[in-house]
Length: 302
Ligand code: DO4
Ligand code: MG
Image (cartoon, rainbow, N blue to C red):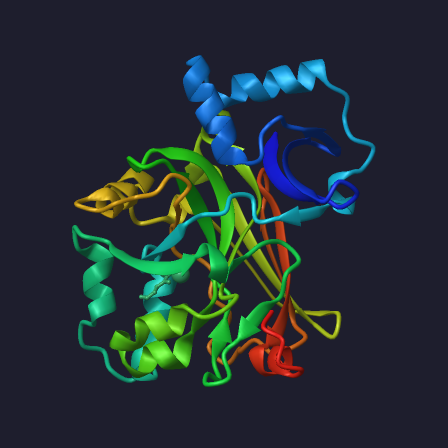
């Protein structure tokens, strides 16, 4: 059972819905946060309200594939964790030294430090959902998707649900100087969230989530990698507890938990590529890749 948001084009309304296998049931809420608030008021878990809807209503005639599925929660802020998997530490060491320096790096140190690396990734205006194009930066020649498990949080940092995310990254900009991190990570359409939210109470063990990333070019699969959240160096609560420390956290904030899949060092995304990030139980997050230059021709901001 997964919570989505979709555009009901006949009624020109955005609605929240539940998908169970291939069936979709409208929820009487605009979004996931409204469902959570309703459950709080009734002093039940959100899953109880969702189960009532499934029992009492008929599924829509459309299957999830036919709906225009949107970002599942308009997160006011998206934060991200860094170097939480060995694979990410190795990739960062390579891009910052060209594989030449074997002295202990910032990345080696942060991997084992008590304090995790957390950074600001995105706002609602920069974040896109399933099917929307991710944009490439014109000042980077080494760009990759970072497939990550996302945690949907309340204002105290409690995990309300799980989603999938893509923390698009410019390896050359970050590799040149770690102080360039915000530029290597934040730009228009550089953060993808979706396609759905799994309620926390329906997940037995989040460390069992498997993540697969596939990249297609001219309809050929040019990269595929898989990993398990079980390989995460830290506990999820360790990451959330540092995020809330002395901070203001808005309900619906998303914390990405770091990448465990990195394409080979000679790989960069190109315009026309297609990215798929799959987390069974959450869904497949698919996005085409476009350059911002193409988007600004005709001067329309997209
Ligand atoms: O250290 C920079 C970013 C790391 C990151 O985004 C990740 O490990 O996923
Ligand atoms: Mg990342």
